[in-house]
Length: 300
Image (cartoon, rainbow, N blue to C red; front, side, top):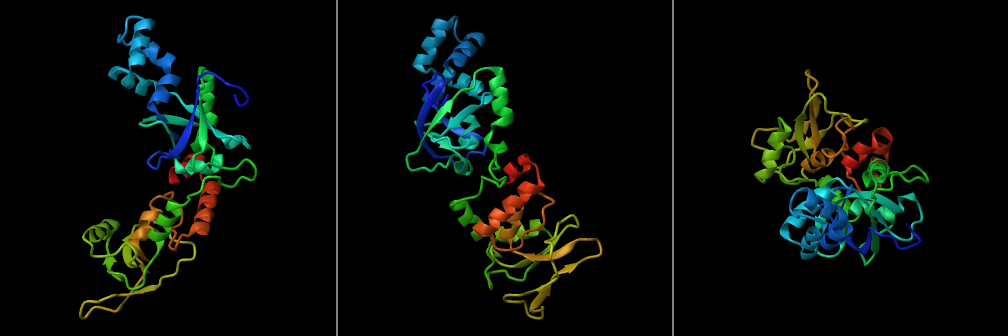
């Protein structure tokens, strides 16, 4: 596989696919058609688009419209292997669900880059097609990128947010003192979201939101207070956090941090602090030790 030329393989430059899930890769249409040609020809004959193999092959060579529909069906249940040289460790070859894309470049999700030590400055990757049912089952159960998020060397997570993701999460979790709407009190998340949509509060303003009793507070939480910006005449300058008899809690945070914590597992303690790169690494490592691989992949 690594040392010689093999059938059912291709090679192309990789580009970023920001909309792809962690277990998906974008395969250029012409490359996918060439790789899956025998499968497409068989499906065309089976579905009655062609009378025999010869006419089906002619349809494929002409790239008729029905061919692309059949190709979509064929690839939907067929993982492909991506390999980037040099293959220095086990994670140098991983399986992905292919998605058809325009152009000639392979699209790779940004979270999969670290395992391959890949970047988008002209790197090339090879695509291999597992043919037998056993090979496909093995690729699906053992080699999917979303199942290989721990380094075999030390057990730490190999998949980490990077670049734009770190910047976005840092911005999302930053609280600006004196921001518009600071100190406002909301009875629910929905009410806070409505205020944000109406531009009554900033995403980085510290507000107080009443959260339900199943809400998991930060480990070291103690009720504090928030200074109100532009208070109404006769209303207090400071609002305090508190826990109610029904178990719900009036909690001070920003709507940006609510959005950030919405991506974490439901029973994970609320992260009510700024999340730069090092803090994100700790959170991902902690989630990897507490939860299943599938949950870690979903969080990422």
